[in-house]
Length: 497
Ligand code: KIV
Ligand code: ZN
Image (tube, rainbow, N blue to C red; front, side, top):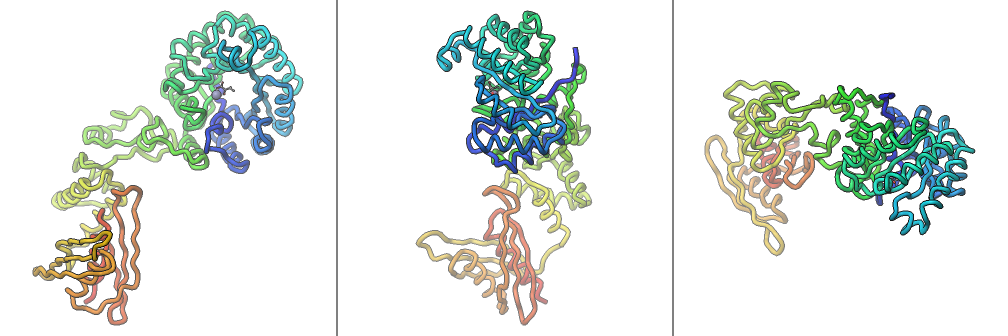
């Protein structure tokens, strides 16, 4: 049996059905182009009869994309099939994906019909689709809950009618991996003409089994998997493309292959997440922010010795530059020193001790320490002791309170204290500092920035002051923005000679 697994991407159809994830045609074309770069075999570009927008997207994607087959979804309804064929008219390689519900639930409660009538409608739909295109995929909706004997009859009939691919969707994400695999094996063993069609999996993730079910389907004879980027899709989503592709790639001994260029995975994931406004959960396999991040001291040490101690995939293989050593209060000196070296900072042992202590101090206040935080810690260490330093700062502020600040600074070994009020905590603190240093300084510019995200983040403050016609610049960063502001102000004042 051929060991090439066809990757059928339905991000733009099943994925796009998610409320709030709708894309316009230009965005869909951008995703389709990236899917082509990624190397998917089939792009399900939309459900043309559902809206003029979907119709137009299928038309435009058909014109733009060259290598993958462009597929359009229909119900087993004449009009749907005719409209899909029309939408595909510019596609170099085209497929119509038609089908109908085959489970007892769908036949009785959704379609208000009976198994024989459904079988006839399935056959007619495939025959009609074959009049327009050579490549027709049939889906037996809710196959996961369809009784195997009846499913086998339907599949045999649609293959006889001309279906080239037969899709066995676990529409409700109900199956367990063993059960889904047995279903595929049952079809392989009981449908006499099954060798005339490719079996496809289409699994939903309601029980978190979508990837496991798809792999189980492959192990039992399926040669196409229907997936979405980041696993987006109805309810809990579809099987995620990156998980199936990397499971196949990581388990070489299974001897399956896909045409995917895995180095494009991260880029594709980010594009889909951004355009669809659907953030990727941090611990998502393969593409989550933490998928290659190591935070505990023991793991960091292990990864620094040999990446494979704690990683089964080289991040570069999926387009991630390198594993992230996330520095937290649990990180050791080795991890800190290593990261600083990568950033271009070399410290002697006694120096690193000082940086490490300040690192721990920051890590206690802030969960994750990123490269920008480290740059600031390291940069400050290199500058040496400033002439004026903030010793302590107390501010009182809030609704119905006059903002007041008490500032203590050390100057040439002596400590001075001053209290002042102002129109806010920063203004009060700056006035106290000005009174202390007894210099006429004017604040020219004052800029506060958060470095990354989150309310626990370091805030960066840049100030520009004027003294006797000259400008002086100050900078500081702190998790407390008022402290950062006062430190930056004092930094600038300290530069006045
Ligand atoms: O989940 C499903 O059954 C589907 C079909 C329309 C293929 O998305
Ligand atoms: Zn689906």
